[in-house]
Image (cartoon, rainbow, N blue to C red; front, side):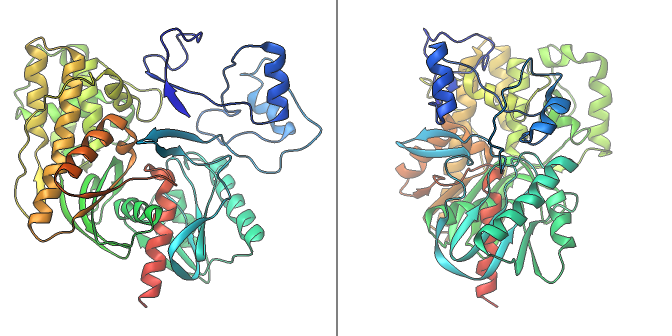
Length: 475
């Protein structure tokens, strides 16, 4: 459980540095009780794996793979049958908001509002990967597998599918997958024989996941904000307003697109996203006195040129990448060491007593566009005026909350639903989630959030299964 860090907590500063929250858990095995009883003090735990690889759970793998990290190994005479990460949960309005659904929750089935006529396998996405098997009135969402980017995690995924199929006696007849052609989960799905394949757009899967989480079929206005997902137009979506039900959707609004110079490098080095957003906001005349420009002066022009040419710079409407850009501009986070670090830090910096917000108008109607340039210029003006980082971060969060409320109100006025579903990894941000929910409720909307599966990509597999089942029922 992520809980607020106490000022007097006897925890080393390098544990979650700069974060107002700490992940706490009680001892849940006899071994934990014995260790903590001997020590009499809290201990810091981390997963037994190399970064980006699945957890090591076999003794014969532990020494060769972790010998360079661990000083000692505590083994047991009972072999581990299935690797499982610890779960991570935040509290939102007195209810669970899962960040990672794994140990303690899996394989408990999720009850579905509508029966699944044929067994469906949802293959998940890439980051924070899970899979889902669904049949009749139940969905079995897997444990957290990790980022599906290498052979080790792919093997963990395929072994997990086989294990669940045996345990629950379910043979997939319909296989749902992401539209991204390079995801290993997509390639796995396309290689399956004797099944019906269903491609599900990433952000529709997010919204369908929230609907299944709440036992609702729709229609809703779905707000899907995340890092990125493959769009139907082959651009990278991530700041989406959808009018959707479980079976289908219409893209009704989005953030303005900007290039991602260097592609995946712009995720690892968010100053590249700052360069793209600043270049778009100032039409090439970026204030030279900005710290982010000075820090990266030796490579700024090359990256901006890459963005303008569109070479290795795919277009994205991602809200997550906008958060990255703002975090770099105001806080100096030029490179990250873990996924979402810049955006997480922006949330931590924000003054939660600040109620000011930057203005941002919606442009057009079908679909409308949220112009990022206005927000970026407002951030820069405050920064150059000497406004505190905490205030700028808060005003930016408040502005995005108003964008959510204004966009949904615009769609309802055009005949859209009065229920809103909020999903995607950006809505792990409790400051944004709380303020957006409050603004929507003040305008008379019913707001659906996640309580049983994560809003991030860990919930994608459930959404894929729900979409495939809904389309199967319509056959």
